[in-house]
Structures are given as C-alpha cells and as structure tokens.
Length: 255
Image (tube, helix red, strand yellow):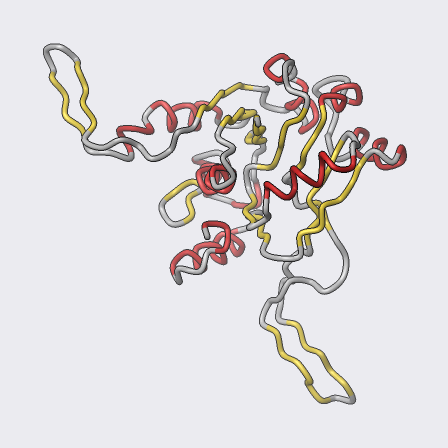
C-alpha cells in the first residue's frame, strides 16, 4: 500500500519554526512530526511512502539522505571511503521524494505523483502536520467495503479551551480541553481509488475544494468516523500540546 504524504506547504502560523525548515520537519520530542506520521503507518505495515515536497524541499531530502548517520553511530575509513554503521536502522521504509512545486495546491501535488501511482488501484494520503491513533487497517477495510472512490477520516476537533457543562449556574462537568462533542472535520488519513485523478486538472486544484466537493455530491465520498485522538500542528500552542504528551509518555499515536 503506497502512502502519499503532503509535505509542501509553508506553515506560516508556526512563525520562526518554519522560517528555517518546512512544517513537516518541525520537531516533536526530537523527531520531525513527519517521522511520527510515518511511524503511524508503519504500525500497520504500510512502509512505502511518496513525499510530495514544495517549500524547502531540500531540507527534507537532506534529512533522509543523512538518516542513517543522524540516527546511528558509525565509523569511516577515509582512504577507502567505506562507512560502517554500528546498528541496523529499525525503519524499513521505502521513500520516494518528489518536488511537486513551490506554489502547487494539494490536488496538484497529488496529480504530479500520478505516474508513480499508475499501477495502484488504491492508495492512502494524509497531511504532513497531523497525528492520530486512527486504526489504519480498519480504515482501509472500510474503504474497500463500500466501493466508492474516496474515504476521508472524520474527526472531532480538540476544543481550544476547557469545556464546562453548566445547569442553572452550577458546573456539572469540567473537562480540560476535551475533543469537541459536536461536529466532524476533515482529519486527513484519506483512502483513494485511482479514479480520483479524473477530478484533478492541474497544479491550481485544491484537493479539498473541487475534487472532494464534487465526489461528495456524486455520493462517491465516504467518511470513516474516528472518535478518538487526533491533533494537528498548525500553531506553536499545538506543538506544545504534542510535546507535552510525549514528555509525559502518553502520546496516543505512538501506542
């Protein structure tokens, strides 16, 4: 199963963090959030990744080119140029990195990978800035069961502030930043059939606009409801939330 990771956006709301590096390379607990996302898929034996790059693409390319040396001790024979790593890297990932353009929209980035996916009937796609404990195996089974072109993982967004349940001025329940009780949003973690390419014309197409809106009207877009942990990283505050979960050894996406 090939997995497409959209890694080309600017991530401007993360301020100084993304002046130096692309958003998927902003670190959570010493590892890029991109690494954390790939670990989510790895748990479900999905290790064939296609990264759609854009803003600061060279930063991501350089990270994976140096992955062994950055995550291992090694020795070098300067005369022969031979390098020996002390340990075998745990990750058995196959990673295809493609520069899909600086200002290409999300649909256009996927379209630029069409040739790489020509032999795939079905593939997964998500954003490079959100983690979840969604069961990807069940998500894929759900997609195959309904036979439609697309499945989106629907999540309940975390509320920004603590939630109070009040009755006659009495606080009946105090919940510190729970998941929102009402409404569903696009949580990424899509499954697509190859027919999705029939709805993307060029670089200017935003996946979340014309393609998915049209598929919705046609009855070809299904929702897999995930009523558990999901968190994007759009702001410094959200980065701090993820850091806090890691530091307390309670990161749901890694369990």
